[in-house]
Length: 540
Image: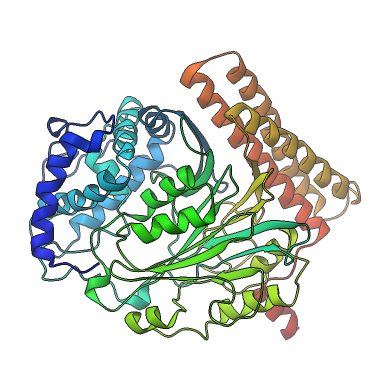
């Protein structure tokens, strides 16, 4: 998108205020009077008075939050349930804004937020209600928060621009972008049962408070998405139609490629909710004004799959064999553009990326064998898999399964991901038609995983050196399972948000039980050696 930024910013500020009044006919609860720009926790400049001095630890196993109802209700539920983590995120973003190198930080922050909000109202005005709900939910949970701060959480990656500059250049060097996000999609003859197998890792910055949200909106698709707790979606989504979406940050050396637009969290939430096919998600991305360099990869069980390589000014689409890879039923993407047009504008030619080649070779050489276990193996045997999180989806049109691992999927001495007590194992979400049905599926899976781990434990003698440690982990998994049962019962005898919140807690207990059980099972049944372990073995 090409524009003269000075004029654009002025127009954005005017248009956003007028749009807030009309909102294109959307039933939004927001009016101009509802927002005080700037909206802060304390007067600035000066000392910020943050509410909670005790910061929650980064979860070793991602918590799960159910959201259900209309847009405001779902926002309220999200804000109320996850308020402590969101408060940490907001503090982090305030610290970033206060460290900016231009004067009048708060006023300029609000000009930036208004610019991004313009595109929310343009493409998905219902998300305004959702953000108001988050702010209200956090406030009622004891963490007073403003709408502007909730909007700020959705603009973290795109907000690094100076509205007074002649061009909105991204101030961080391109090479400092997250370096090792990797994803793939395989379907049809490439997989064991013709199902869609979809993988996505998020690498780079550690110390994130990550969470999974499972959304049951009054209209649109049910979906699973995740990211830093506070965003409405990021990096990964799978919906009830089997449409899967992943993202890798890319970049460009041109200032025009980083501008105001529809930010990544908003795009994920909207595509997951309203795209019934990969083609529909692709067309949404091509229609929207996006904000900076990204690779969206999209697939569905029909076999359609695409990568939309995009900046704020240029977009290109690729698909299997679009670049002469041959007739294959898979598609790989990393942080690097691969279409000639995007390589030229980005100034970065990384077609020799080893991660891309490794994924491609794994899939090419194992056609017909790709399934959940194969996908786990690929991430566990790649040197770049010291990820903050890895997600794998398996969809066949009727069943939609999502698997999540917080932290690296193998034991590593790297520094990209440092959960307090990583399990290196996945939990399963079997997406159903309601929070209760989804929770009951998680309960059954937890019970099955405990059984698998217990079977392996029975092969040990009490005197085996690993018995005591693994038995302690397995006992924790059992305790989480029973915790989930008690919370599920509480959910079933209450109603409204109290019931929903208990289902969220039960789901989190069951998924923790799953991950802990699989940690024991993997330790005993064996996992592929990581590159680090392979190097140590070679030295011996």
